[in-house]
Amino acid sequence: MQVTRETFDEVMVPNYNPAAIVPVKGLGSRVWDQNGDEYIDFAGGIAVNSLGHCHPELVAILKEQGETLWHLSNVFTNEPAIRLAKKLTMATFAERVYFANSGAEANEAALKLARRYAIDHFSADKNQIIAFNQGFHGRTFFTVTVGGQAAYSDGFGPKPGAVEHVDFNDLSALEAMMSDKTCAVMMEPLQGEGGIISPTQEFVEGVRALCDKYNALLIFDEVQSGMGRTGHLYAYMGFGVTPDILTTAKSMGGGFPIGAMLTTAKIAASLKPGTHGSTYGGNPLACAVAEKVLDIINQPEVLSGVLHKEQLFRDGLKAINDKYHVFDEIRGKGMLLGCALNEKYKGRARDFLVASASHKLMCLVAGANVVRFAPSLVIPDEDIKQGLARFEKAVAQVVSA
Ligand SMILES: *Cc1c(COP(=O)(O)O)cnc(C)c1O
Image 1 (cartoon, rainbow, N blue to C red):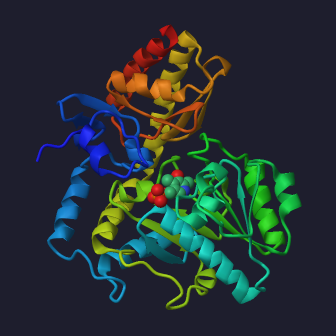
Image 2: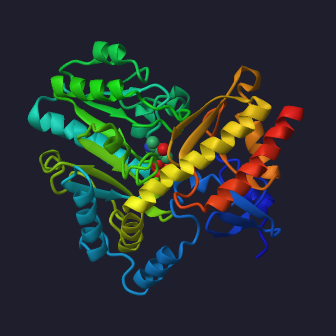
């Protein structure tokens, strides 16, 4: 059956508006479309394809597990899930793991756990959740309500209650909002969708101290920042500030859908049998792939490689900006970088994305003012060089238009 981008509009719910091309094949950081045109991928499936497309070790483990055992449900456990959980606990602060299929589901579990823990250990009134403006935590109704852009949660009727927002990096606003009624504070240790905004060291430490003071759980949403993305296995490690609950997804599966919530044994105890669940969570196919992703990424040379590649990006982007003067700032960490447009180009991030696509480069935006790059953590240096050359042409095109 012949299908095209036009078929999409005939058969799909119109909640997405994908690009005009239809990709059909990927290898490493290159992608080909239906016409055989080759693209360099600086988007990485929105910070998901952490080892590029069709990484041979991931393909091998997927085939192997595919010929062994696909699915059981949580009526039974399975070896890949147990091994992956064991490795995650060995590599992080966590002592217990809950598997989900996406970032939003990992966050949904984290929020429900925080509420339940407060009821178990304090009182039913300790139910306030504080999160940050411009934050993003997923699209289920609870997680999108906790996210800091009301536009995404408006228009669906009554929202889950006791959710408050304050400005990111504003410790006194958080302090003013917190009380013994606060059960959790949820934040991204590097805001992704909101515009690649780093919290200050002082802010992260301050949030931790306030959570301790009010017996509130600190939830780090590392769905985008986690699994090597910032050059640390998890971004919290770079701050030296440990959350009570951490969520991870995106890069974790390298493209296979999986998410996880990590926490301590004491907190985990509140999710007793029957309190929460997922049919597919901990699926052996997903866990086998994610175990291999973790094995590959959690090596010193891969993590330091991320910082080396960040420098290549920063040097290249700076050279482009010295010539064309379009950015105020190049921000972010590791392979999660944002070019914040200056006053003259404000609101035009999409124009840069469209121009990049016309020069066969896939990139992303983060809001209207930031061009975002979230490529593979092992993107070859040569692809960075060639991709940046394409980006320079795209920038020149926007500037001269
Ligand atoms: C992408 C993202 C999510 C949602 O993940 P899904 O897999 O799309 O549900 C949640 N939090 C952050 C920080 C994200 O970047």
